[in-house]
Amino acid sequence: MNDKAVLIQAVSTIPDLDPLPSPAPLTCEISAASLVCLLGQQFSVINAYMQMLAGTNEPYAGSINYADSLLNSGDNNDCPAIAYLYHNSALLSVLNGIDNVKMPALYHQLASTTQIDKEFHALVGELEYGANHLILPAFMSTLQKRHLLIVRAIMLKPRILFIENPFSSLDRDQVRVFGQYLSGLVKNKNITVITSNANLDFVRSYADQMIYITAANVHVFNHWETFSDYING
Amino acid sequence: MKATNVNYVSYAWQLVDLIGQTTTQFIINVVELVFFIITVLRRGFSFIRKNKQNALIKNAVVREIIFDGIDSLMPTTLVMSIIIGFSIIAQLIMVLQALGSETEVVNILISFVALELCPLITAIVIICRGGSALAIVIGNMSINQEVKGLELLGIDVLVYLAFPSLLSKAISQISLSVYFATLSVALGIFFSAIFDSPSNLKYFAILIDSIEPMELLYFLIKNILFGIIIGANACYHGLHVSQSVTEVPQRTQKAIMHSMLSVFVINALFML
Image 1 (cartoon, chains in turn purple, orange):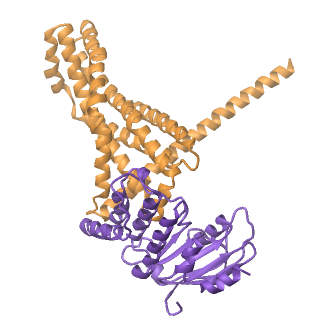
Image 2 (image 1 turned 180 degrees about the vertical axis):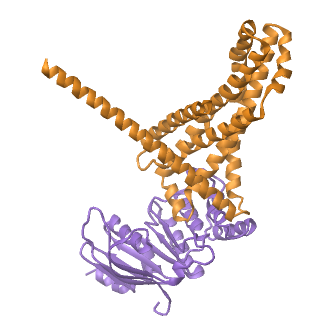
């Protein structure tokens, strides 16, 4: 992991929480093409750390440095290098699945319509579960909606993908399938995936870095064993 | 006696205070809406200029024109034209003929019916049909975090959601207004010919010759403004829905009322 480029460097950062439960400072380095899980018991606090790392919220204290490659995201500067999916992020209710996914890419004119079409089919085909993407989001399963949200974000070729509570409302089999899919994004597409409140089986199998957030401390682990030892006392 | 006088003065001040607050709020709303319209149009045209090949916005405009213009063409506007033609225009022709000359009848048909009444009724149809629906759709999108999701994808919501709405409402308003004015006046003359005298059919020829180019220009500008203001009110109020579902009907009501008010105010300004 150390030989990979560092994309985000946080130094003694504290998220801006209202009301302030005075959270602990976080110091960590997040590398390219790694899978990072933020864990803990207070969902709102963990998500506040996520949003702070993603730059959607300013830190209350400390500093966050982003790699130059994130700040200069190529030809199209409107296209974000960091994608963020809130736990309540939703597809546009007035467009079907295919149009929902293709729309941001068409808006930013990342490629021709035919190429975007091909890209869509390639990305959607990576998770096989026999879903019809021509229906409106209201008629989709949670897995399909979450999958399409990720595909929609990936169509813009981000370097980092933040996902809040990726496994909530998914059943056991869906968690397994979705976990494999997320790890595939890291391995095959070199995207850094940062999740909050991930399933522990998923963390054990795929996470490269675990950030455990408690009311008093923030611990950063680079191996499951050390994290597991810490948790088990 | 003194206490009663003090009460009256207090009530009077409260009334002045209320009028002052309402007026201030009204002025703030008008200024905000004007800024909203200018921002949407500026960003929208700038996006189109930069991305000439991008068909996304054009497709959105076409989709909304189909909903606002074409879908309401046959059932709503056709029925309204028949009703207005029969109940107002035919009777107006019959009454005016008894009181005035041919020229006066034609002038009133053009300036009152075709250029004033028809755009207003069309605007009311678009407000009730398209404006309210748009405010509800965008309001629900705001609550469901769909708008926030678009912003996180680097999409300018004003360009993707508001700009096509403003354009499509303006185009729909113009085309429906022309369609409605032509049809209702033609049907009015036709009904007056049936129920009064077949000689009333002469108004078809006189009407066409009597329309001034400047009047048509005013008609066009007025309808564009009506359409833009209807779309802007719907988008502005829809995007201001923040968290609660109860805000959606409240904002929709505001969008409808503000659109109605704006349309009547613009109409009055054009009469000056």
